[in-house]
Image (cartoon, helix red, strand yellow):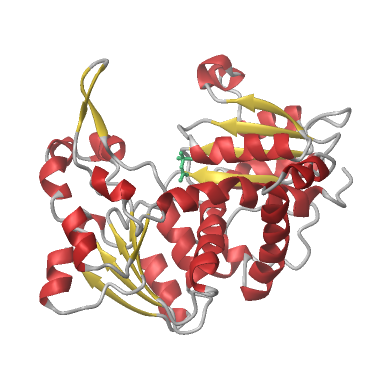
Length: 352
Ligand code: CP
C-alpha cells in the first residue's frame, strides 16, 4: 500500500489491476454494474451461450508461482465461460524462471507481438513483483492483473469481497466489520479494508496477537480516510470490553508456512494461539446476526508427518460450514463473476 501512487480508474480498457488504491467509489460502481450483468448471464444456459462470445479470440496467460485454488480457478473457469483460451504456468520447476529468467522477461515473451497473450494474471510470493514486470508488459501493450503479491495486495479478492458485501447489505456504508487473525501479513485484509474504507461511516475492528498486528501503512490509510477503528488482542478481550463485532466477522488464517521461516518457535505453538482466534458453532449461536466471511483456504488439515495429514481445529470449526451465517462459500462463488467482469472490462475495447 503506497498511498498516492495510484489514480482511480475511470476507463478499464487496457488497464493493469495492481492495487485496491486504483479504486474509488465511482470505479467500484462502474465495476459492479458489469459484474451484475455477467452474474445474471451465468445463471442460465441462454446467458452462458451469449457469454461465450465476450472474449472469443483472446488468450489469457495465467502464471501462478504460489499455491492457489480459488483465484486461479476463478480466472480459468471464467475465461472458458467467456470464450477465451489460456496458457497456464503453475509449477516453477517447469518454467525457465528456474534457470534464472526474470519474471519481466517471462511476461514479455508470453505476450509476444505475433499472437501472444492479451492479458496476464500473475501470483508471485515477491511483494511488489509487478514493479519490475509492468515495464515489460508495456512493451507489448498488455495489461496484467495482480493475483496476489506476497504480503502486499490481493485486489481481486477485495473486488470479490466488495461484490459479496453489496449482495448482502446493498452497500457496506454504515456497517461494522471485525477482522481476525494474521492482520499483519494478510494481503487480503490490506486490499479489502482499503476498499471498505471508501464507504461512508464504515467501522472496523482488528483482532490479532501482538506479533500479527496491523502494519502502520494500513492504519495510516484508515486515519487519512477518517475511518473509525479499534484494535484488540483477542475476541475474548472484545467481549470483556463489550465491543460489538458488528455486521460481519472476517476471519483469516494464521500463515504457518510464513512463520516456519521467520519464527519456527511460533509455528510450533500455532495450535495454542489459534484458540484465541476461532469461530465455533457456540460463538455463532451467541452472535446469530453476524455474517462470517473468510477469503479461504481455512486451516482444517495439517501434515503431521510427510504425506500424512490429520484434521485440526483451525480458525473456523467444521460445523460452521453448515450454518446459515457462513458466507465464505458465497464469497468464493463470486470469483468467476468478478474475474469475468475484470477481463471483459479490460479487454473488450483493448487493441494490443
Ligand atoms: N482467497 C484466495 O486467494 O484463495 P486461493 O489462495 O486459493 O487463490
